[in-house]
Every structure is written in structure tokens, then in C-alpha cells.
Image 1 (cartoon, rainbow, N blue to C red):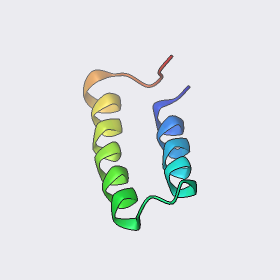
Image 2: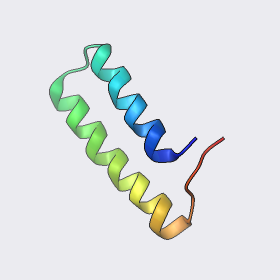
Image 3: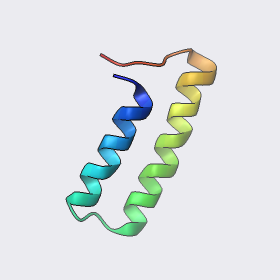
Image 4: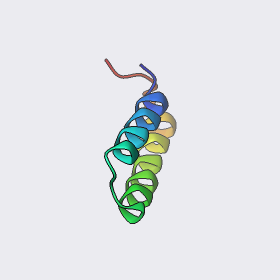
Length: 48
């Protein structure tokens, strides 16, 4: 599965589970930094 897809699915999951808007925003920002690192620095696109 692509890392970007996994992140999107996780963000939908926490929204469905009624996490606060602030928490979702914080998770989204942190995960975007992580995904960018994986793609640009580590060269990782998928996860098993």
C-alpha cells in the first residue's frame, strides 16, 4: 500500500471516530512531514 494512501485512510478513520478537529489537524500536519521525508529522503513509497 502506498504510504500516502495509508495516511489518507487513517485520517478518515480518526474523523469517523470523532477525534477533535485540532487533533486531526495536528496528526495531518505531522503525517505530511513524515510522508514527505519517506518519499524525498528515504526513498520509501510503499509499506507492507
